[in-house]
Image 1 (cartoon, rainbow, N blue to C red):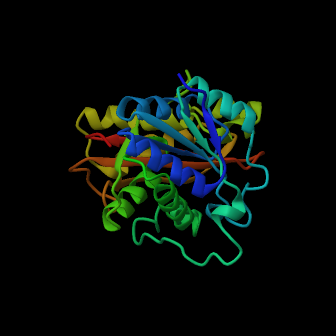
Image 2 (spheres, rainbow, N blue to C red; image 1 turned 135 degrees about the vertical axis):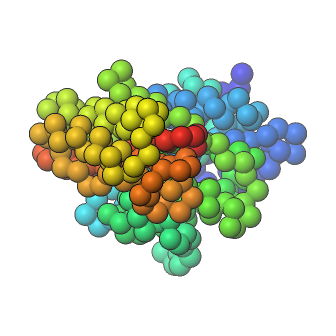
Length: 288
């Protein structure tokens, strides 16, 4: 197996991808902001199963952070990230500089309407414009045949799916299941921010979602009752405050009164001490 390459220049990455494809190899992209954990490893493994070459991007995207958010303190353990990516089977790490992705005269952004205004979009205005813009740029630079995203960031997945459809992106989107700690907490780079007390309360998000799944599978279709099951678990927490608990349509992200087709049950909280924002979700009555 060839040693993993580290590429920082977008033009070099573009040319390398063209070289792979001219040689008859398919390219898979795993976009990340680094601080890799087992969830990211699962995305790399998924890309491996579908493509000959796996490119993992590591780029902390400034335009998806709000002015009061954690861009400056977001973890950037680049050397250990590269080691983890290589051990997972990654062929190329693409780690561009901020100035190469957003020159001083950068003036073009991608905005996906409607589905970005609810859930995380309501609390983080502009966030999904930043996500859609950087993902489209990565698609254009890497030209992958497939790209892999984690279902933990469910609304992000829905936004990217809509963008790819509406803008005729020639890439197959793969959505991999959420990877969890033993106690159910969804793996996230931001989990490292949590205090010991907050970490003890954090699994209550998934406990509530699991209660909603159990209710749904027993025949409950009232979104209000399903939300209440999630909220009841969250009320047991002393270390975080709920930002939202919603049951929404998988296509429009509109709140539902009754679940008649696959629906997304989603929750977001913010911890009291470290102000860490945690999100989680499950799909009721179907798959992503």
